Length: 150
Image 1 (cartoon, rainbow, N blue to C red):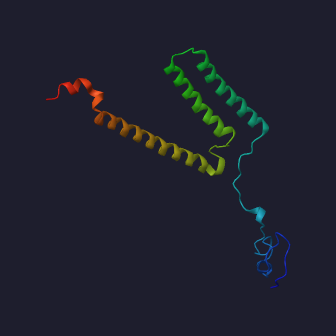
Image 2: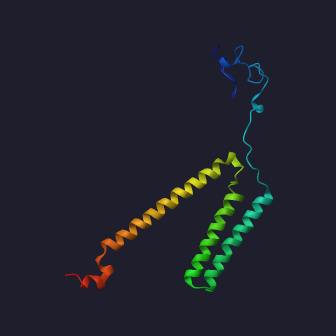
Image 3: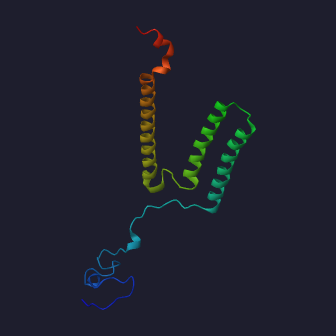
C-alpha cells in the first residue's frame, strides 16, 4: 500500500485488492450497488403540495372566521376548531410528510400510531391524577360538606 494522497472520494488501497474490487463485479455474483432493493419513498409533485397548501389555508381560514364572527357559542366554536385542527394534522401528514401505509414499509405509520397511543395514555392519566388530587386535596371545593363535619 502506498501513502500517496488520493483524490477526494477515492477508495482506499485496501479496497482495490483482488477479490474486493469495485463492488460492481468483484464479488463474482454479478450485482452492483444499484441492484440492491431500496424502499421506494412516495414522490410528491407540485400538484400534491398545492393541494396540501390550499387545504391548509381553508382549514385555517374557516376556524378564524368562526371566532371572529362569533356565530356559535364558545363551546361549539371550540369543538369545531378541534375538529378542523385534527383534519389539518392529517392533511399535513399526507401531503407534506408523505405518510401512508406504503411509505417505508408501513413503519412510519406504525410509529405514528404507537406515539399517539402513548400520548393519549399519558394525557388521560395525567388528567385523571390531577382531577383526583383536586377532588381529594382541596377543602374549599366542598363548602357544603365542610359545614356538616363534626
